[in-house]
Image (cartoon, rainbow, N blue to C red):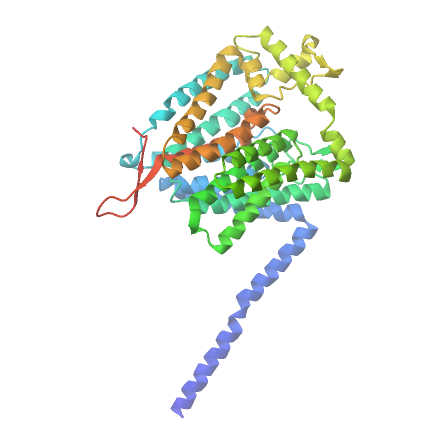
Length: 496
C-alpha cells in the first residue's frame, strides 16, 4: 500500500506540474496577441511604450557599463539603436538638448575614467598628423561660430556633426577590442540594417514619413517616395546604407569561417537590407559610387571568374537603369532631368562667389543658406536654372563657411587619413590588407557622394563613417602572434 501511495503521489505531482507548465506559455501567447492587436490599432502607443521600456533598460545597462569601466557594451548598444535615437530619445523634441548620441559620448568619457591606468593603450603614432590637422579645423570651426545669428543651431551642428564623431572614433581606436567583439558587432550591425530597411520600405509603401523629425519631410521622385527612415533626411538614410553595406562585408571577412548557418543567413539579410537602404532614396551619386567600387573590385580580383562576375553585375546595373526608364518613366524623368545637374553647377558658382567675398575666415559654420538668402548678389544661373542656395558639396561648404583657414586643415586631415591606410596597403599582413580594401570602399562611398551632397555636415553620417573607419583601423593595428609556451594573444603594431 505504501508503494502504491507513493506512486499516486508521484502521479499527482506529475499531473500538477503538467497543469502548471503551460501557464507561462499561455500568458506569453496572450501578451503577444494583445501586443499585435495594439500594434495594428494604436501603433504609436505601442512604439512609445516599447521605447520607454527599451530606454529604461538602456539606462540600467549604461550605468552598469560606466561604473565597470567597459566601453564595449556602450558602443555595441549605440550601434544597435542609434538610428532611433533622435526620434525616441531626444528632449525636448524641438531644439533637443538631450539626445542619445550626446548621452552616449558622455557615458563613454565617464567609463574611460573608471578604466585601470595600467590598461590604457598609447596613441598610435601614424594617426598623429591626421589628428593635428583635424584639431586645427575644429579650432577654426569653433571660432567661426561667433559669426552665427542662431548660436543654438550652429552650436548643435558643430557639436553633433564634428565633435561627437571625433570622440567616438578616438574611443574606438584606443579602447574598443574589435576582434573579441567582432561577432557581436556583426550581429548588431545586421539587425540595425534590417530594421532601418524595413522602416524605409514601409514608408515607400504607405507614402508617408513614419518617424517624422522637426524640419524633416519625405520627398518624391515622380510618384515614388524617397524614404528617410528614422533619420533627418533621405541622404543620411542612403549614405548610412552605403557605409553599412561595406562594413558588413568587412565583418564577414573578419569572421571568416566562424559564421554559423544562422549567422550567415542573418549576414545575407543584413547586406541585402543595407543595399536596399542605399538605393531606395534613388540618389544618382549613390549609384555611381557603388558602381565605381564594383569596377575597382572587379579589376583587382585575382580569379578570372570573380572578375567576370563583377563585370556581369555592372552590365546588370546598366540594364536595371534602362528598365527603370520603361517601367517607371515619371521617376526616371525626375532622376535624369538635366535641370538637376544645371542646378548643381549653378550652385558651385554660387559657392565660389561666396568664398571669394569671404576668403580668409568664411561666412561662419552653418551660415551659407542665411547669407545667400539675404543677398541677391550671390544668385547664380546655369542653363537658365538658378542655384539652390545650399552648398550641395561638402568641400565647397567648408571652403565658403570657414575660408582658407578651415579648408586647408580639413583637406589635410582627409589626405593624411587616406595616407594612414595607404601605408597599411604595403604591409603583408592579412588584417592590414583587409582594412585597406574596405577603407577604400568606404572612403569612396563617402566622398563621391560628398561631391554632390553635404554629407560632411550630417551628424549621423559622420558618426557612422568615423566609427566604421575606426573599426577598420583598430583591426589593422591588431596582429595575432603565438609566442612559445602561450596561447594566441594580440599585440598592437604601429603603437608607440
